Image (tube, rainbow, N blue to C red; front, side):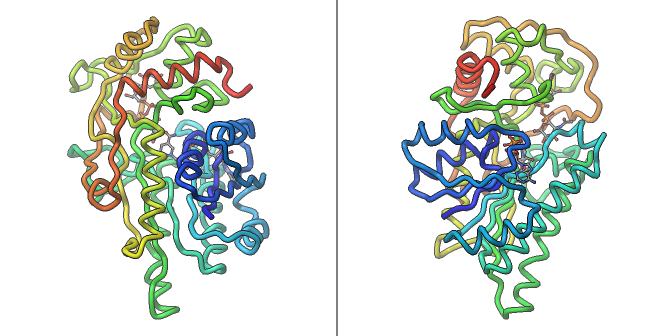
Length: 344
Ligand code: NAD
Ligand code: UD1
């Protein structure tokens, strides 16, 4: 059984589908702080399979200990956390409290239960302001905001576990995959689940879909004077279904005889850079719907371009993204147009 923290969220719910489709038993723990139980109901509808859901906070040590006692868990995927960069600048303590303490409590419970297979949701944000592209996993790491710093601190904390285990037990049993996501977009092709930001979206794709559906007047394009193909920011967008499949591959690797040697980071992206205007134009063309936009000032803290070298994930996880820009924009719109108000 796989314990999925934050499994009701955007990436977590898509990953539950892929886990169930691959015949894993799934136990979700989620506080529902940033998600709806409806997402998990729809996961069950889509797969025709059931999962176990416990509403609760990963920072609750008693709860976490009881989960490892009561369920036959072999590995954990840890999605639970807060993820809005701007909010993290305003409320850094809230971000450190949630992201760091949840991971700490989780790892203590795992250690006590001797279940040491972990897949952690990291982010391309740990590369800070990239100096060379494409980004490989061994490039220098830095943080430009508290959210990014929380991911970086967690990565560092997890890196300390194998040596400690070897000291205590003569042998290390921790296997930790740090999955560094680039820019997740898209939705399940059924249109039943997708990204449902509770506030005004910070990220590009939900802003585009909410503009297209009429909830926002127009998209603000943050800067057209970057040194990129058309002056707008370039990112490595990855379809959330591909990303979810990457988690299944990582879990399979941890549970295989070969395993992972201690802690290893993997970039999950497509390796392709797409500009803001390329994304907007592709969305408009594939869905035959206009997206009104206006060029405005650059957003502070943004980098010009960011995309992944995905060789390590290809070689070691036997994973690569299969879906392109067309599927990303079509599936994002399919979800938003069927669910104009998200799960509400
Ligand atoms: P999300 O907000 O949709 O999902 C996170 C889930 O965790 C939510 O369901 C929320 O209710 C739950 N949660 C939060 N704190 C909790 C706690 N203490 N205990 C239990 N549940 C808790 O976000 P997402 O986009 O699915 O992101 C999942 C993970 O991936 C996060 O760790 C995020 O930082 C990371 N990540 C996301 C992106 C992205 O663009 N979406 C990019 C890189 C990394
Ligand atoms: C943001 C976060 C990053 C996080 C990532 C994935 C910031 C500074 N960085 O990065 O830490 O890991 O999301 O969750 O917030 N854009 C517009 N108009 C919009 C929104 C975005 O033009 O309304 C542009 C941005 O300038 C950027 C691109 O679209 O060039 C993508 O933006 P976004 O989706 O916010 O992702 P990132 O900037 O990569």
